[in-house]
Length: 313
Image 1 (cartoon, rainbow, N blue to C red):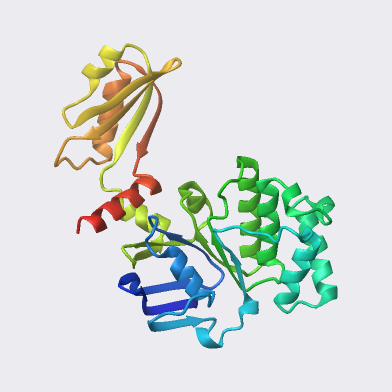
Image 2: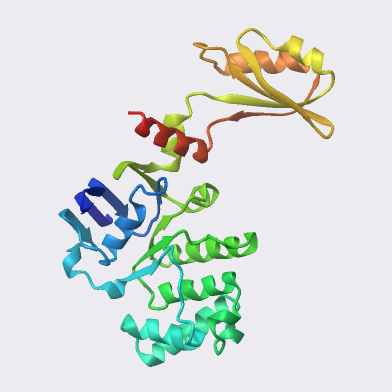
């Protein structure tokens, strides 16, 4: 069941088309990645779904209702452009955003205490934003976006400016929210985070949603040019002489005590398990194989290829 459905969405700014007949859907309870190059229309789409921007044509259904009738109290939004009220304490700001979303004073206090403790900043309630590091401020803004227990949560570049420890912390919180029933739309350039978190992803470029699929489906479709990595010990020249005619060496380097070689099939050669078995046997006669693995395109490489194909189409 889809909690968001967008049909033939058009958004223009004077003569510039930001979104051109976009079709987009998100399954209820999923973590959905929204990917695309800068200027593709991601933030515009998110702002329309948050009723911050109007649109020129199309249909937007959120939780079974036309977006004009949707209650914004169901939606949480962490925008890419961060900003806290500099003259208000952290506790006051969190209470303000909770009450703005219709949470009672008593429930808001409970939620604030829960999240401050959860994000390990319970001693910061009476402090002002300028007293907090960038990472700490981002934690506060994250709480602002979830303080009302939203049904749908939009996160626009949530990991920007965070150290690795806080990135991992945010990932765990996103997963926890998803398990509690919250649908999450994640817009980020951090492909590793996308692979770790998202159930499905949509690519948007040149103002169009191009494809929506699971990550495994994307990889299966675009990984038609496999490479094979062999880590070995021994004589490099002996290794070269062991490679049969169906493969060529794309790269080889020495990392500490091991050589790491990347092999690719020759053009118009389709390799099967028998070819790989022969390769391994041939190589192992000459050198000691420490590791062997098939390597496909990463999500970063798939992203670049999709965008490049669209630009030149």
